[in-house]
Each structure stands twice: as C-alpha cells, then as structure tokens.
Length: 459
Image (cartoon, rainbow, N blue to C red; front, side, top):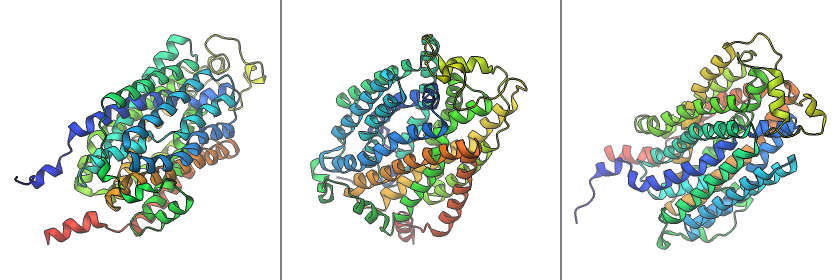
C-alpha cells in the first residue's frame, strides 16, 4: 500500500474533530450561561468581593483534586467513560445551582461540579489522539473556539432567560442543566472512543495522581517550565475572568444583561482567534513564539482594563440595579440589610453617565482576548509534543490540575485586592505579572524536539 503523502499530515482532519467540537460547544454553553452571572448571583445574597472570590475558587479547587485522577483514568479506561462521568457531575452541579437559596448552596453546587470537572482536559486528550504534531495546536485551538462560541451564544441564552423570567438568576442555571444533559446524550451516541486498548500505556495503570507525580512533572526538562507558566499566567488571568463582571458592575454600572453583552463581544474575538487565526499563526510562528505573543497581549489587555474610566453607561440607574440584585424574579427581597440597597459591593453614583468607560473596556478586551485565545492552546500543544504518546492524557490532567490550582488561588487573591485596594488592583497586578512572565519565557523557553527534528531533517 502506498504511504500517506506527507502533505496530508499538515491538514487537520475535521471529520475526526467535529464530534468532540460539537460536544464541547454544547457542554460549554451551560458554563458560559452561568459565568457572567455568578458574581452578581453571589452579590444578591450579600457576598463581599472577598467572599465572591471564595465562591469563584470553589470550582477550580475541587477540580484541582479531581482532574488529575480523571486524566489518569482516561489513559487507563479510555476517554469516553471519563467524559460522561464528568458531564454527569456538571449536570448535578447546575441543578443544585438552580435550587440554591443561600451562599452555602452556591458553594455546594460549585464543589460538586468541580470534583467531576475534567470535561475540557478529557476533550483535549481526545483531540490529541486524533491529530498529528503538525495539526495539534490547531485542533486544541478549536476547543478554545468552542469556548469562544459558547461565550457568544451562552450569554445570549442567559440574556433571554433573564428577560423571560424577570431577572430571576435561578432560571439560567436550569437552562444550563438542559445543555449539560444534551452534551451527555451526544457523547453517548456520537463520540467514538479515540484511545483503543492497545494504546493504553503502562504509565496509565498508575491509578492515583499524587503530589509527587506533579513535582516529578515540574522536574521534567522539557515541560517543567511550561507547567510553571501555565500556573502563573492563570494566577493573573483567573482573577480577570472571575472578577470582570464585578468590576464592570462597580465601575460602569452594568447589570447581568450588560455583562452578558461584554462576554458576547469577547466570545466573538476568541472565535476569530481560535477558530482560524491560531492555525495560521502556529504554522508561521510555532508554538513557542505564540506563547510570547499570548503573554504580551494579555499583559496589555489586563493593564488597559485596570485603567478603565469610572463612568457609568448612559442607561445606568443605581436604584434599578439595586432592585435587580436584591429582588429575584419579582419575589420578596432578602430579609437582611442588603434588601435596603446596602450592598457589600458599592455601585457607582447616578450622574456623569456616558460612553467612554464602555468604549474603553471593549477596546481593552481585544488584546485580552487575543492573549487568552492563543496562550493556553499553545502551551498545552507544546506540552503534548514534548512527552511520550502514552503520557498525553495524564500530562494534560496534570496541566489541568495546575490550571485549576491557579484558578482556585486567583479569585481569592483578586477578591482580596479588590476589597482592600479597590477595583483596579487585581487587573493591574495581573498585567504586571504577565509582563514579568513574558520576560521569563523569552529568556528560558528553548526550542524542543518539535522544532529541532524538522530542522535537522531539512538539513
């Protein structure tokens, strides 16, 4: 039989990627319906900025515990059963979120979802199974494109469900649960198993992921620094993700619907980057230079966000936003001090409304979306190219664990900075951290076998 032409390996096989892309998109719709609302949801129960940070940390802290185990299990038993288990936990978490009547309920919902939360890392392993080294960055970028599409469609669904329910924050959680159930059905009936039994390597039989295994990964000469970068950049970016809605509410007076609009705009940008541009940039620049680009763009985006002028949007009304936050779906207000409008997170005063603040933050979202769009896929692509094939699932699980650990710390740090030093502090600090990481990456990331082998072959 003739061998496959070399050029064929340069093109992504969309037929293999389409099922996981659709499943991830449907799965992410549930999450992106919730993300813009969570800080305001917690605020409606009287949470401070620091407590909102704790709520934001609950999911990734639980995921930090669960993701490495599930990553190893996917190497041992296959990708499909682990993905189904993870999706079931997400479904239960959304149901609990919809039933929540207090902050402890919100916390329980996020913990349940997080403990089973390996949806994205398992999907990344499916894509790694289905791509070559030349197409892996583009394939992993499509997961990000699904995330971007989710941020376009999810907030629109959230906006619609809020409008139909009279701004009842419980309703979007139940809608998210429906999408989670749909993703489980699609996984069961459509997604083929991509890791056959003969490819489940001996390392996959190590059931547990221990702290020792994570430290061992840090000592790996090819991927240790990449894992450190993954962790540190998410310390900076995680606070941005978790606190952006709180920032725009306190700085610009945007309510849940207004924040949904911001996330739609970001989602469109991410789709453009990860759905097409990242493949072109990866082929021209390589993953290593994409990491440099991502760090620099994200540093600029966070710094610009921090400098957003404190000008409420033209349609802002402090009284109307206070009512939305204290009265859910037309029901009686909470019987505490917050029902009188004394919210723990201050709202801007009426007057001096205008467009400058909104225009500024939309402009800041452009470099932030470019940086966020290329950074994680390029780092994960480098990681998968610098380990053995049978280690990919477990290594992506470790990467997800570092990411989750950073996501657990970031909102705590960001919430504390927000509450003690003001709304600018978390974003300006994040921008400075990313600028320092860019200098570190420029100096220390060396070409790996993904660059050296092709160069040697051409020579």
